[in-house]
Length: 486
Ligand code: MN
Image (cartoon, rainbow, N blue to C red; front, side, top):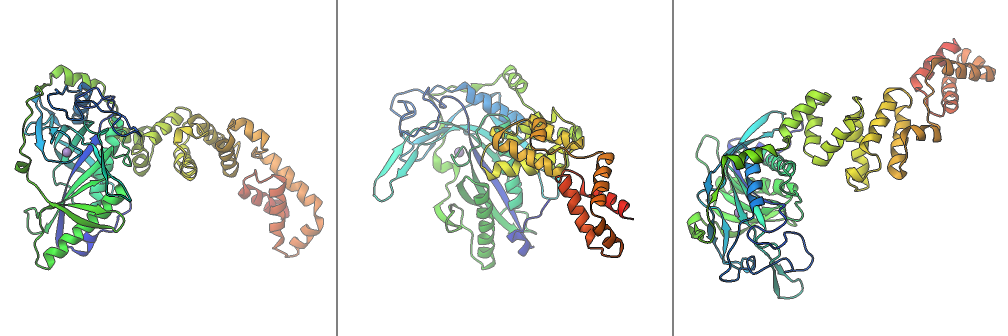
């Protein structure tokens, strides 16, 4: 696998420590503490009620599905599941937070002390520890109208359920950060608890970065980069932040603990506010919600619904289908792709399958911006194409033509071979007959060739390709021509 260049390569005596908090929006039908629909809506303030709009005197009721999902996420990341946990109020003022506090979990979150493995660029794995996973509600959205000095508040998102997944600062490079994010991003989609849609903010990361001299084991002062929702921006922002902090230290200036915003247009980070510590939020235990009691039976029930997880699936694909690690890595990290591959693999044993999926199919769906399963080349049809190739009924060129024909207007591979006249002329007898005919029809050229006009070899190959309409193996044709021209 390719090693990316990092700013750390230029500062060999520095190390970086990165801890990441990921906010995962859960795909429950209703919000975390009320029955309002949890869905995207074009119309502002259409999915709200007195509870998520923060009216006084209303009482929240916890959505059980959100707890199910939290337990599932905890089990998938080897966390301990707390048998008893509770909610807390985290106070701060924002116009899109009508209660004046966020209902979240404090000292006792539902999941603690887990870990996941990430893949490094040399193919090895690294363990990244999680401190906790907790359940909390999201805030609404402030909308600052362009071309006017008015601002609006849309509370559709207020009270929607989130999981916050918090890592230890075990991440030690930009590449590791990216790999960590992708691993969690894939995992929550396998668990079917989050859409993973980053543009819509369903998966977003706050990144805590600190640099230190390698010989100093103590962590440096950290800066937090807030709410970045694209893998590219996160990578750019981390690289920028590592450099910014190293340059401060090199010039003898202190790194201030603060929260910074990444400006995606200018590719710089800017200070947003000096970072609060936990005590600034005046956490206290939420009096309106009872503690959550999680029984062994509840945990066992969730464990039963656990799907095959990406890391296990990857090993199985390597063992069962002989995929290379890199191939398995690519498809396992894309849920639709791995589902497509496994469907196709039910219909063929061909070793060509993975290449046709990764090369032809992926190129096609990318070019035409369609989803894998809406492509007319279904898993079954791609399996038929590679089987026809394996059986020498068509050559690569014909297979590509058939692939494109199906992708554009559908059809059955076997029928298309006939319709498009793409049968590979494979039997040696057929080919010998064709070459003999060509030689018989062109006595002049044969004589000139035998008299030393070597260039004419190309003429015979051209004739043979024409006669076989490009459906014969060119190497075999050349061998035969040589044989008959001797
Ligand atoms: Mn949070």
